[in-house]
Length: 382
Length: 93
Image 1 (cartoon, rainbow over the protein chains, first blue to last red):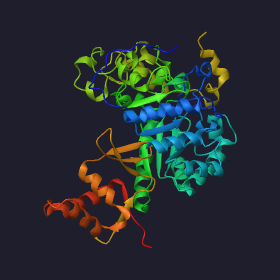
Image 2: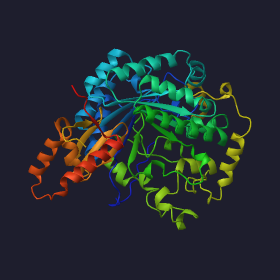
Image 3: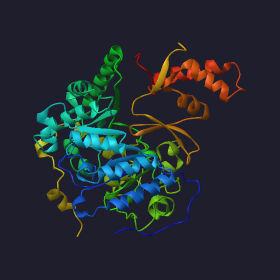
Image 4: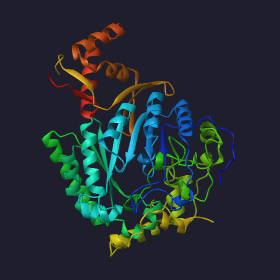
């Protein structure tokens, strides 16, 4: 159900700059840290080509300029080329965020001709065996490598994204070497964020402090090596916030610069918010502008009037905006709570307990719950 | 810095005027640099064809009131843009 409630517009609210278009929840892979909602199988409707075009047009008119085509696997949609062409025509910088499955040389050319600016391919590991265990597909890794090479030779800037967790982070040296070999322009070494399926599998994913420190040292060593070689491959290492003492300024703030449109048109302030006990409005029932500026959902955590203690009296409340609402809810059951990552939070012991768990024995890769429709139905609400 | 050097944006990056923001932005994979007027004007001239001398001449023509600090400011900006990875020297052909 979408939430139709609207509130008066606050004219201090800026425009959205980023639109993430989750074209579909369908995906050939089953990564156990997927950011899609646990009950994705309950949301099978997808906006039509025309509805996506109208949504992009409205977002662009509001000022959005970065556009990510994501999913699920966006290549599952056979109108992707048409959507890219329209987006580019509108003036978006167009990013395809893909597993690489569903890509081939012909499609790379067709997307290029449609005006696609950038393809980001995700890798699960540095070697085929771990990659297969993570993604649930024995052939995916080789396919991804072939497609990464094809994307590079087609002239796109290539960013590789590797989600790090306790079962692959110790192989970081080999992972970076592989990205170097593939000719990446940049590599996102993104420690798994604990939402959706990742939160479900947290005990088997969160790396220990020692693993994080070793990975940071490996990254620093690689940066020196690359610089010495004059090789321009940027390494972005994203620390898991479970190992921090201050929360991240999630999405730059709730409803500040970013919006996600889910496959069925539900508009969210981030791609994890669907797991919150809230209802969000949908396009095309409402215009994007009404949703962004006037919906009760988007206005709920703007500003600081909603903040509890200790955030409300904290000097840093306008830097981190109280942290992440999804994380606060997932850990405490209260979506208005201070993000427990903060060591001033009364719930910070929950983070410390998760760290202690990560320093001990953990679930093996084979024990993680795979992200697929069968497992998802367990979470679907009647 | 050699005034005969020719610069261009990093491949796949795009300079664009954003009406909604009232400024030029530099767009790159999943990111954006919001530029002030002078940065936008200089980057717009780093087109892979003009050398730095021609860029300076074009800026002189466009901003005749600019003082003698213009050259130094442009050199500093180009050095910084190179360091940030926004631009590259074009390969000699």
